[in-house]
Length: 226
Image (cartoon, rainbow, N blue to C red; front, side, top):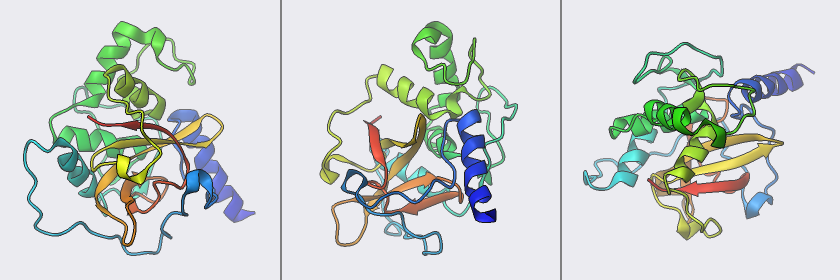
């Protein structure tokens, strides 16, 4: 019973506040032909040290910025927080799945807090109303999966091909369905899982930012490239 509470309560909190999964139940290995995530006790695989990334390679820069969060953001915390604007953030050791994306984009000079807020102010009607909002909120809008994916799609960043492992590249953004309307989001890493064509993913689903072989662990809803 204690384990059940520990799993379900974070999911309900995250769903109600951010629409982002926390400590989701173990997925079926057959979901999208996938594999179960790397156990939380497994060591985090690291990208090739000393790799040189061209300033023009946006995808690799995003992937590297996401991987820099591994071992730094160690707490999953979906609580609503009052943020500065622009460049508002919660403490770096805390965050949710969307914060992995927001922080990686800030590392390449793109502030999704501002971009999502500005687009929502102009086009509020096209964004999801799952949280009962009646106006944009710069403290939290960019920290909700459905809002990020809506923004990426509106900016023409959605890719149609999501079926083959080879269709994914470092820095791509992937959104999954966990259960019901609850969704999850992560970034494709720089390197592939050994013996596969499948890249690792960098995400936070309850144990802080981690790098794991879990691309196919949940139903993929969207695939985006900046």
